[in-house]
Length: 150
Image (tube, rainbow, N blue to C red):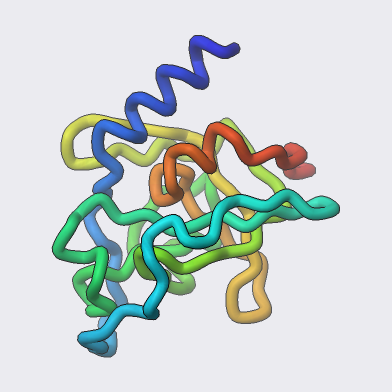
């Protein structure tokens, strides 16, 4: 199991860039949110943990543009494409994860890194899913969460 986690972490660290899934009516904001990347680390709480969105595309680490938006999915077992995207987040945003699965649809990045792990998070008063490949690699490895029921 440790070897599998190490492999997953190496793949995640190699490149986390899945093509940005964007809405048809995005907004543009030239400024960031003022947080340094990783300023808020994963902090376990009762049944939840803070996780930080990570976009390896350097040009997108300080922009909140439509092209830099990362998709949140309705269903981690359906393809990760626009029809399954219900919200967007940007690099550096902190989400509250309540559980994780390891057998969701595999998300592959532009250089071949992949992960089938997903986190269920609260966003805009809904429970949605973020692929682990979109989360800071050390948090994927070190965040203790229960498996999601299902």
